[in-house]
Length: 321
Image (cartoon, rainbow, N blue to C red; front, side, top):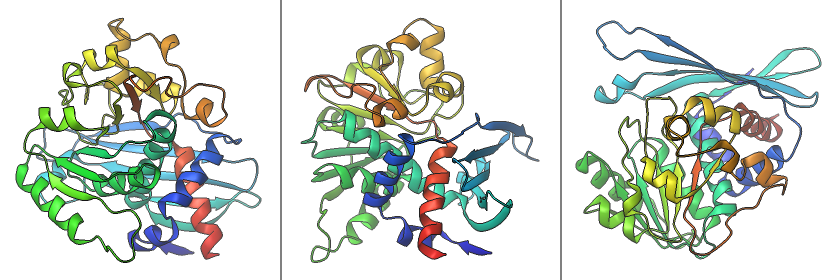
């Protein structure tokens, strides 16, 4: 059985292809149980780790499951916060056929899902992207958003300014003007309020428990991509941002239960589930409207779905088998 590491997955799953693959998957027929969360204590750490189990299967060809350990304290030790493994099975005989680095798979498919949502929700002429967060997901989100919109300027903000500076420098150095058709400047943000005010798309991927995006800072026409809040006690945007925006989610079931960015405003009556126009299923099936005006503020809340893992794993398998 083959194992695909991060480098091989990046080669096999270029964002334009992966985004289109996810579009087809959300419009297709998959079974996706709600993912399992299990907290476990970590010796010497006050905050527990989280074990995620995410299964999914299609209409009879493949099924897969992702096992992921989320260890928040790892970021203080120079270790990945998310680690795990994904296994793809052939349905007919239940044979495991492929394994891959779950962190790399998660980063790629999560960024692709955000970019897919952006095709429905951001303005077509969006040219400035603000990336809030400096973790492993940030470079993927930047590349994915730039694959669907004519991004010319990327600004990176992090609570650790040194990390933001280093990431901007590293990503700028990786660009190849001769071979790449998606060129954009990459600089650190001098301040978060001014960076938010100037952005067309704001992508946020952090482990913050306190909102980083106040609604009073948002401007008409902006699209906000919330990726990091995966537990009820986490927030990346405050209640005012939710109140001012038209909110979409990747999956209604997961968003209403798992993320503080949605569950908390719903509990307080600020957001009503029936006022969420759609999720990625209804958007991709053309059952729900996307952006309705140039001045609207839109928010997409990504929780993560095993369907995305399976669709990406199938695409990788079709290329290597």
